[in-house]
Length: 341
Image (tube, rainbow, N blue to C red; front, side, top):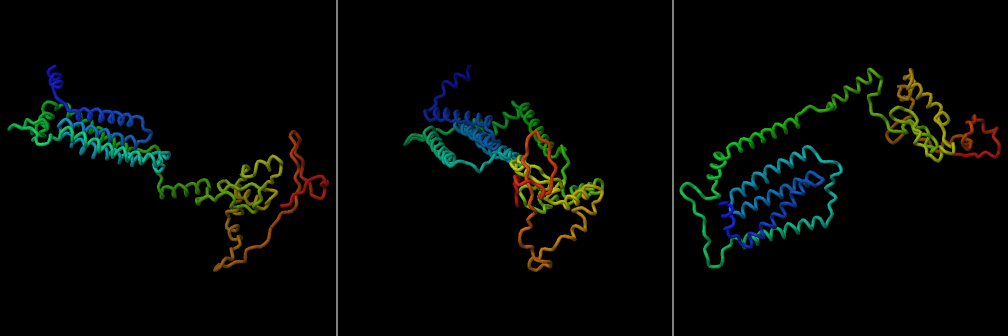
């Protein structure tokens, strides 16, 4: 009751009252931003704003030392550490901070400028003495009894609140141990660096015959670029059915690899079977590839002209009908459509 009576008897100026309520509203809004912001960096910035508002509260109440400690220790050190942790852990790929709208930037700048002007005006109105008067300065006794005296604050913390300080120290130690454990803990999956990756590839090559080199992209082994012929996968050397347009497949206008390049199918079959020396990866196949004939390189000139396949016939696909056997082009009726590539 005595404290309430003293608080009620305290005379607050209009500037102090307005400053307190405006700062309190901003502080609560920033605290809600810490909880509801979708990105970790935005939450950290809101937390910095909360700590700055709390420091201004301390200064407005005359606790200058605590206000400075709030800015230097918590806002300057702790929040910087939190931001470093966020940068070490990383942010999600969806957190694109480059897509900031222009009006948000100008709004933030204007809010910061007007906020600084408001704080300066309120502080001047609350603490600047009237013209021609000398402000009353707080006096300190020999024992240092001023409210903002660091000596008195230290004596109070380590005598009256010694157990609270011990608990806070224990929490800080737990936080440090947790940070070290999360940073240097065991990984869920083994980290493969370049030597481990090379060793694993050579083991797969020795045990299962998997080629240790980089897998080629689809279409490397193609001998035709016709749209009705499927690409060949660079991983398993099998035809990719979906590489042909669905419209051609629905009309039965697509060709298999056996129709387009029977010699290539035989090499792929040998490479996938028990005759890898006769496949597309064999030494003989590599030596059989003609040289480019480019400037400064040996070999014949590049071929000219089109290597068009023979004329073939497209049989329309009828649902429910059995597949018909392919027949030579000379035995087809005139009603069947001829397609030339």
